[in-house]
Amino acid sequence: MVGRKVGIIGAGAVGATAAYSLAMMGTCRDVILYDIVPEVAIGKAIDIAQAAIYSPRGTIVSAAETPADLKDCDIIVITAGVPRKGDMTRADLLMINAKIVKDVVENVKIYSPEAIIICVSNPLDVMTYVVHQLTGWDRNRVIGMAGALDGARMIYQIQKKVGFGSGRTRALVIGDHGQNMIPYPEISAAGGVPLTQLLNQEDMEEIKEKTKDGGAEIVKYLNTSGYYAPGRAIAVMVEAIIDDSRIVMPSSVLLDGEYGYKDVTVGVPIVLGAKGVEQIIELELDDEMKAKFDISVKSIEENINILRNEGFFD
Ligand code: APR
Image (cartoon, rainbow, N blue to C red; front, side):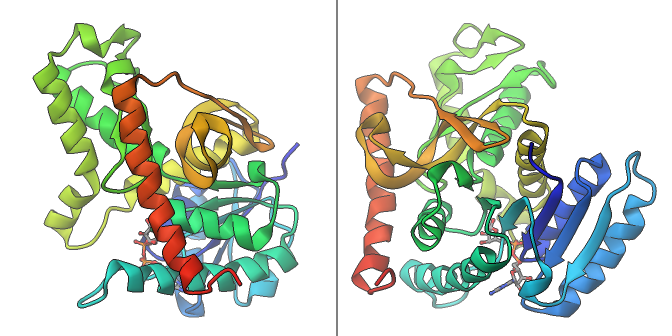
């Protein structure tokens, strides 16, 4: 049985929204926010704690002022990172965020050694790999949050297109959480009705493109990335672990032979429960999907290799 103490590292837009969502649902006993800028964690924790007064089940929301205050958490969510700015290349960003995740993980190992980690920092699949390498924990305890968000973005597009199915539409996105993600409308359904019976190929292609573009579309309007949907997606994963509900949720996990790959983290459907990754589900992919999955895995491996060549893991 998983306890109900959740630590969130990085109290920025995504981390704080996840805390708010959890506090509204009342699933956790404690939600603790930590940020490298303590004022951010303290201020947001006070605000969210005051919002939680009116939620149906109480949650204690507080701030950790030092990494040591984030002690014995059952689940740790990592959203710490910096966004890409100005003349930063992707490789620059990769190294900066990898170093942040390294700092964070060192403390998690000391203060919450039994936790399940949900990694959210980008580039997601690579940062999840970094967490694996630096913790050395069993792979069921390190999970990247990607498919929960990308799936929600895809369901949004499906519902807009078909005009019905609210709350009962299911969709799957596998692969990396980036340019090569693979929305899979061919096996998605609205209230159990296969999408292939509701939409033509052109509509399917449009849904795929719009799903891939889901994050960028929000940036276009807000000049910053979304946080409500990422925050809620994190909370749904935390709830599944605490409730041991064993939902099927595509997530970035370390493969060890599944889908023909080893030593790489990529989004595939998993069963999410009290142990974290309870099971990895191996979909039968046709040749076209296999080729797409291969491109996706290669793009993650390329980035892992950038870190490896820089001596990051030595
Ligand atoms: N330890 C703890 N917190 C840190 C550290 C660190 N070493 N370094 C940075 N932070 C904090 C920042 O102070 C900031 O408050 O991480 C927070 C990040 O928040 P935002 O900049 O608001 O970013 P956000 O939109 O929340 O995204 C967070 O999730 O989806 C991903 O790409 C996104 O990697 C990004 C992460």
